[in-house]
Length: 353
Image (spheres, rainbow, N blue to C red):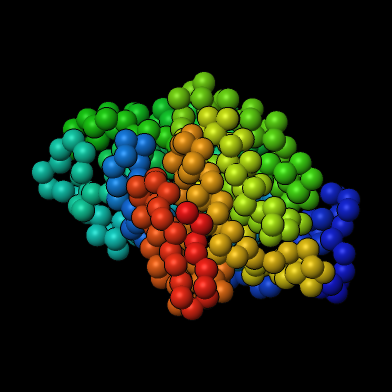
C-alpha cells in the first residue's frame, strides 16, 4: 500500500488505484438482507410532510470509485443474485411493520402506510450488476402501494431502463391485489456533487456538468422527477468558499429541472479522505457552513432544499447549541422557510439567518 500522505494523482487514470489502495476492510453482507432500513419524514412537492420508508439495499459495488464515497463498505464483491432485492424489501417491510391490510383498497395497503419509498443502493439502481433487471417487475409490485418511489442512479446510466421501470410501476399499480391504485411517481436521485469546474473532475466520478444536464433532460422528457445531491465543502475547497459553491451547485441542479436538492456535508471515513486531510486538501465543513449553504439555497426559491442531518455532531464545534441548531435545520427542512438564527451564549455566535 502506498503511504497515506502520497499525493493525489493528477492523472485521472491513476486515481481509482490511489483511492482503492486506501480502503479499509469491507463487511460481508447477506445479499438477502438490506444494509439498513428506517422510517423518516420529508416534505413532499405538495407541501405536506410525508412518511418515507427508506431502504439501503445490499448489492454489488458501484463500478465508479468516487473519491469521497464510503458506501462500498457494505456492498457485495459479486453480482447481486436474482431474487435478492425483493427478498430484502420483504425483510425490511416486515420489520418496519409494513404489513398488507386485509381489506385491500386504493392506497395504504401497507399498515402503517408511508407515502414514499426510497430504494437507495450504494450505487446505481439501473446498473444491471447491482440490481438485476429480471427483478424489476417484482420490485415494482412491492413498490406499487406507494405514491412516489425514489431510486439512485449515476447520470451515465440514465436511459431506457428508467422508462421501462417507470412503466413497470404503472402496470404493477394497475394489477395491485387489492384493486388498481394510482401509479407511483418515479423519482431518480443523481449525485451532482459540485458544479465547481476544477473540483468535479478530481472527484473521480467520471461525470461532467454536461452529462448531468443531458440525463436531467432525458428524465424531464419522460416525466420522471429528479432530486440532486450536492456536497457542502468537497475536497479541494476552502471553508470560506464552500457555502457559495454549494449555492451555485444547487442553482445548477434547479436549472436542470431538479425539484429537490439535498445538501450533504462532506464526511471522511473512507481512507482516501483521511489521506487528503494529511496533505491539507480536505477538512469536513463546519456546521455554520452547512447552515449558511442551506439558508442561501432556500432563498433561491427554486425548489425544496434539505440539509442532511445525519451525524451532525461531527461538524459542530459547540455542544451547547448543537441540539438547537439541529432542530432549526430540521424545521427548515419541513417548512422550507429560513428561520431566525440561534444565539449561543457559550460560543458567542449566531447561526446564519
